[in-house]
Image (cartoon, helix red, strand yellow):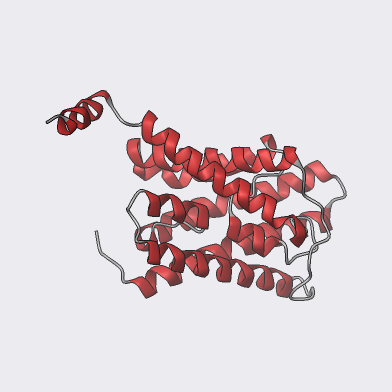
Length: 232
């Protein structure tokens, strides 16, 4: 597989996160414009988000790994598959791309380019939901890579589509997306004051998933090899 240098990988992360957020925010604005039925609006927000994830991971994954998410980059840094410096730069690119995605969505709908959200998303239930959402996302990615790497774009897209509906937070599962969505006072927004709780829950869920899946996915043969290597 062709190796891509860091500037190209960062550009891919920024572009992918920008398109992802533009899809989340833009489809939310469109849904809210077309219907007053909240369930139908959520469906109109969900399907484009899941679909664009399949596209973005397929086309940008070979370049950067298609993280589009600081929690995912943190997981790969902890796995020592991404240098800590690169993970930090990935996160900066993702946040910058996400903000650009919000601005682009607003521009397409003739809204103020930046408009701080007033939508309250706080409390223990929503923090738990974000932890669960991030746990499931990371578990999906790690198991997908282990058993069927080619299916990862579909697995992630389908997981997020489902998680929109089974979590009370509608599954942000992504600190960069959360920051970007705090800048839109539309259907998909989150009040800036509520970001710390969401981001903390997402990072905790991701790290717990890494620990659990590291144990779950380690086969008996690998475990025996580890024990044997540790013996004098």
